[in-house]
Length: 357
Image (tube, rainbow, N blue to C red; front, side, top):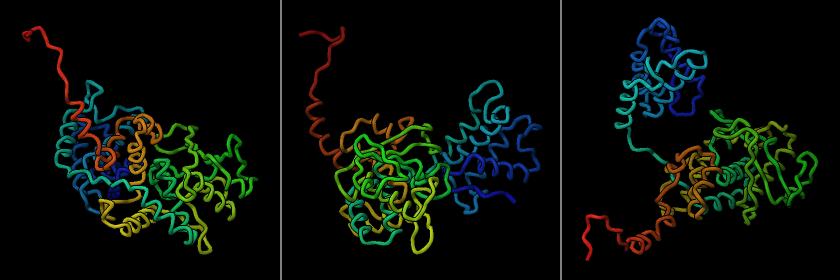
C-alpha cells in the first residue's frame, strides 16, 4: 500500500522519502535504484504519479513546485547516503534535461497561483476589540495573529501544529524595559505590563539562523502591539505553570490545555473580514493563516521600508519576498501615474550616428 502524498509543500524530507520508498517497493525496486542504469525513467514515473494525485489520499493534482520538491527530496536523501543524486546527468552536476523539461511542462499547465490577500490593520483592530472581552482561547488566537503580522511568521511558527518548522516557545522570548532584560521566571506582571521591547530567538524555524534574534518595540497601540501580545502570552502561560518549552500558541482554556491551530487563525480572520465587508477589496475566502506573513510585508512596503530590511525581517534569502507583496495595495500604486509623467520627460545622449543640428 503506497503512502499518501501531502497535498501541500510542507511535508518534511523524511515524509517525502517515505512516499518514494513506498512507490519503489510497489514496483519491486530498491529505493536507491542501484540496479537501474537509467534512473531518470523511474523518477519520471514517480513525478507523473505525484502530479496526477495517484499517490495522494485526496486524489488531487499537485502543482509543479510540489512535484519538484518530492524529486528534490529523493536526490537529497541519496546524497546524504553518499550516493549521486539520481536526478543529475551522469556526466555532470546539472539536473537531467528530461526532468527539467517535464517540470517546465507541468509549470506551463499549472493554474494561476492562488495568492492569499494581505489583510489590512483594520482586521487586526477588529479582532483585538473582540478579544478584550472573550474567552482565553480567543484571546490567545488574537495575540498569535498579532505576533504573526509584526514578525512576518509562517503558520508553523506561530501555531501549535505539525509542520516543517518549529513553533516559537516560551524559552525563545526575551522581554526588556528599556535596556533592562526581565527574568521571565521572577519578574512581576507589572514589569511585563511596562515592557518596551521583545525579541524572538530562532532555533529550528525555517530559514532562520540558529541563535539569531529579531526584536520589536511597542507599536504605540495598547491592543495591536507585538510587545503587549508577547507579554500577555507570557502572563497566561506562567499563570498556568507552563514549562519553558511550551509553545506560545498553547492556551489553558475551559479547564484544559488547548493548541492554537491554523484553523483557529483562519476562522478568526475570515469572521473579521466578513464583518468589515467588501470595502476591504477582497472576500473572507481570500484569507487564511498564511496571509499574515504577506500582510506584514505589505504593510512595511506601504510604509516605504527598504526592501532589504523587509527581507531580513522576513528571513527571505532571495527575491521570493516579491511574491508576498501585493501591488493591489492602493498606497503602493497611488502616486505612480504622476511620477511616470514627471520621470518620463527626458532626452537621450545621442550616439555618433545621430546628426547634430
